[in-house]
Image (cartoon, rainbow, N blue to C red):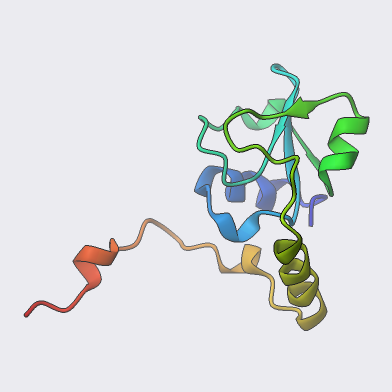
Length: 110
């Protein structure tokens, strides 16, 4: 997953939590690494590097982001990611073409 740079860049720009755990984004100019859903402003694609785990990003010399705090990984997410890989249901292939309606706008009106 983390080797497909174009898909990873799209996932970071979408800031969707579904991609957390699939890869970690390191930013060369700041020396930090983040989850794909980090609330910080996404970096330029030329400054992004992608790693399969937080440990791999740390070994490459990056520190954890203080916005999204990717270092303390939640075990239940790791199990969910492992399950998705085993079933072939990859959320990165399900990125929306554009922003959809909000929950309020999609709710039926009384």
